[in-house]
Image (cartoon, rainbow, N blue to C red):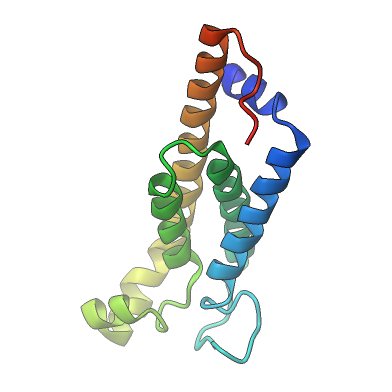
Length: 150
């Protein structure tokens, strides 16, 4: 963990700007269809839960930092982001869940596990970020270089 944080501490401002931009993009791509960001494009049958906003914000920030590491782009961000999308979305507005479980199944079975999906999304994104930052720090130590920049 300390090695990962030491790598993060060497990032230039430009790289943090890239992370912030990616985080905002993830927040919009996740927030609009789940109606966490209120727009006329989407609506919810069931209101947003109290835990959905923190999961959305933390997963967006972690995805942005992960995207800024630029190692094997897409895979962990997509996996953790997809979990976060399922976690914070309306249980009866989710077409795959409705097809598999129906409305009553979505409310009875899927809705109660959404906080667990949110926790898994945050854990997956945080774990992937730590792994990438450790690898980045190890490469920088091995080559004797500072941060690779963007």
